[in-house]
Amino acid sequence: MRLTEIRVAGFGGQGVILAAIVIGKAASIYESGYATMTQNFGPEARGGACSAQLVLSGDPVLYPYVTSPDILVVMSQEAYVKFASEVRPNGMLIIEQDLVRIGDIPAGTRVYSCPATRIAEELGKKMVLNVVMVGFFAAVSGTVKPEALRQAVLDSVPPAFKDLNAKAFDAGYKYGVENPDALPQHASSNDMVEVEI
Amino acid sequence: MRLTEIRVAGFGGQGVILAAIVIGKAASIYESGYATMTQNFGPEARGGACSAQLVLSGDPVLYPYVTSPDILVVMSQEAYVKFASEVRPNGMLIIEQDLVRIGDIPAGTRVYSCPATRIAEELGKKMVLNVVMVGFFAAVSGTVKPEALRQAVLDSVPPAFKDLNAKAFDAGYKYGVENPDALPQHASSNDMVEVEI
Image 1 (cartoon, rainbow over the protein chains, first blue to last red):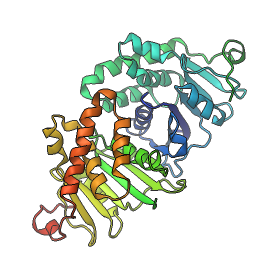
Image 2 (image 1 turned 180 degrees about the vertical axis):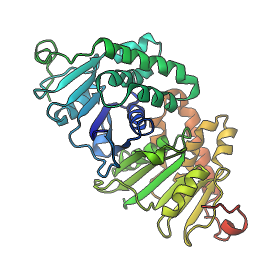
Image 3 (image 1 turned 180 degrees about the horizontal axis):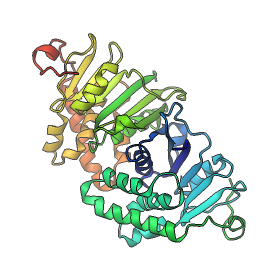
């Protein structure tokens, strides 16, 4: 497993931490790698943005802080504004389509977009949007095996919610498989609302 | 706020991570300190023990790993066996009374014990034992203000569960206020079952 830094960010209540835990578990427990999740509280946590950082690696993780993520999974505009500039050159940005409008992003950033909230609402529970995002991540990120992620989801939710979360994962994964291409770069400036950072 | 290292440990499904998140939030958001939570996944996470590490500080946390916790909050025997030896000299051990039997512990370790599972069951929901433990922690640890912890609990649970969790916190806190003394040291060898480590 290649060293991969990931940040998952959104607002409180979206299940940001659970999404990060699932990715960490999948990488380690089911793929025999190592992972560390870090969550910072402090002035930056006093706003509405909520963020968890992950380092996945084939070896024990000595430095768990994420400084320039390879992948940013982002589920709110505030978190996007705060963290988008950190993504490393040629990194990957995975956004919730209806909650994030991208502005100027560094050339070479690959942007993948999923209407996770709408998909979750179709399943009857908006709160599973985080797991829809994990399913989408499984399809497009190429970092952790989809089966490992799916298993980690099932292991991380209460028994009564396994079915719902399996459906959420599968729906996000399906959307990613059917929409495997990054958004065209010009889309970011032509088709979407510019955001002042 | 003095630099304080805390480990919260138990088995999966007990809400170990939520308990740690609540303590981190309370220290930072409501007490203007800084906190970092770290969770490691890897071979050590492949067993049943689940653990989260917290560093609370008045300044930004530069090194988020916990090596010898000032306080170990432990909710399962497996986690106790794994982590008890790490507690720093004269540190504090906070245990779930019915799930943990202490064996030899370093002289000077103060042990506080709460029947959180029983209290949670009396409230009708065994799953809130983690919040009962947080309430007990609020009463005995002296690290984070009880009001800050209570507020962090309320901010960290879904609206439908606020009442239940407030009751769980209050019940754990009350138990701690009424049982404020550490167990007598001899109790560890005379009155409790020895555990092979």
